[in-house]
Length: 235
Image (cartoon, rainbow, N blue to C red):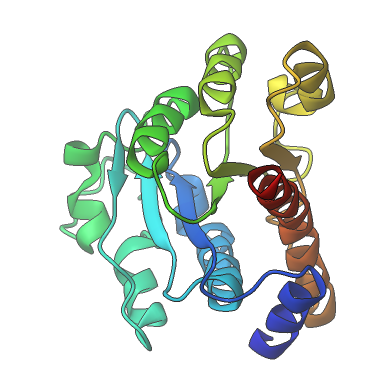
């Protein structure tokens, strides 16, 4: 899988070590952490980083707040996911009193599983990576965008011209229509906003071959934007 992903990066004319990959997990709802969805997202993000970045991805999680999670150490992805990408199922009767893993213990401190703000997380990330010396591919996992269209559009505008590419990811058919479905309209109204793309099939459980194809589809818009950005600088 890693070899195929690196091949996809070469086909896209992306050289390893000339991009930064950032993975942003939605922490607004507990359910995705109780199954495979978040672990699948982390594995795919790590494979993309392996093809593009000189290190594993920076991982953030957002709910009421947006926090950077501990770094994934080389060779310890599965152990990291056991700490930060999975939760035990909620009990049918009563509230869970488990201490659990570091993610479970951080729920209150990080403001998780009571909804979250995409726009607020974008602001934090824009300030964190907006001065990066290399292009930054932000793999931004979204579970809900209710009532945030205007705020997200404003964040897109503020990040235009920054070395950030917003690759929004959502579960097929589980997201209500939002500004993410209208990025063509956004670009018509603000032509400077070229650094965003939306894919609503990221979380699908797929065969190995199709999974690699999906990852290629995930980096293709970023690759096109990165090439155009380089041409503008050279011009």
